[in-house]
Image (tube, rainbow over all chains, first blue to last red; front, side, top):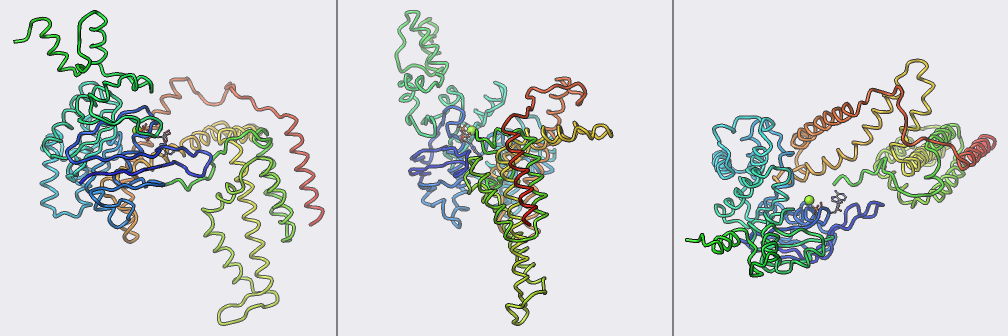
Length: 284
Length: 264
Ligand SMILES: Nc1ncnc2c1ncn2[C@@H]1O[C@H](COP(=O)(O)OP(=O)(O)O)[C@@H](O)[C@H]1O
Ligand SMILES: [Mg+2]
């Protein structure tokens, strides 16, 4: 069971003066239980890619298959879409109900579940994203702070219990603390729900911290695909397409420049922390 | 999803028509529209169509873009055609069967009205395809300047139009984004009766209004903080100037208009 993309091509505004090729021959298989980080420059096609995963955009050529369901088929698409929970960038812009609880329930209600189950799932989603049900359920979504709005929007998708949780830049526009809270929430969600997570991000560090697999996009193509170690051992290739390096790598490089022997595959922040502690003789 | 809307889309280019002063283009288009309503014979429209075709060639715009702009109106055109065929009872009957009573005159009149409408849309499309909306509002402001004498708020009107035009694509993009987000939450815009479909619009309209008001607020602050205080004493970054091609284009149009009036 997996999300499979086969030779997917997509062009915006095809046949007009503004035609723009956004995806070129993208093939990709995402299995259950993976945590996939997608990085790339603005305009490299990340959002276009993830919007194909639940069939909202249809490829101009190629196929998208979710757990064996062909997403180009209009009738079965709905079933496939229920498996893939897609949280768009700035999801707080989609809130519209009178109360937060009603808004979180919108997706589940569209699935046609009985009221008790809706209520149960909504409460569960609140607690999973770390929103206090008693405090927020009856508030208007427009009264919440930016970070709270985003968590409410996330809860709306969580309540639908997707097998694959797809997040497009979930931390965009938040302050450092807000970013950390959301990233921790996402990592906890994966543990609690056992779903696969596909996360688009700008931040090397966030992707490195959370992912078991990293996909690098450039100009509508997948240019790298592998474990974090594999990707960052190939740092030259990242620099070639002008992507930054994670802070751990920069730190390790600085240490090397100062004559301290750091192994090439040590660049995760916690590994470095341990390494430095040992060097300083602080390890217990 | 909203990609079919091409009305008012600018087609970038550097043709003679693109380089014409927007005021010239606006005046020529108005003259063209007047001519269309003066003509009362079908065959003259053929001449005008040739003129339109040549103008499109000069603008280096693919014909299919002009045809594309007719698409949103195809049902209106078809209904107009059918209505006219049945409403007009004068002339020599061609078909007289059951409720169908069609005369030669009714067919001619129907073709006549459709030709006029198609040419009207084609002409205005050619103008909007070759002129940016901002240039067009500048032209309107400049041409309406005399109305300032009677205290008509020309500048304010032009500024409102500029802002509206500037935000139409933004709002369309926004609508597209919100629609996709609600689709991802299982919203269904395509099935059900009229009431269900109208209700399905609520999850789109509310976020759209919220963001439109927010944008309006931000724009007002941005204009305020750059000391915008209306049109008095305001200078322009781009000053419109008539050049030689405007004179030529004007002459061509005058000859064309006089010619059409003389022969019809
Ligand atoms: N709705 C749209 N219409 C036209 N072009 C678009 C649209 N959305 C995205 N694009 C273009 O497609 C390219 C890829 O966009 P996107 O997938 O959003 O990139 P990313 O998420 O990596 O920043 C960009 O160059 C963008 O300008
Ligand atoms: Mg994006």
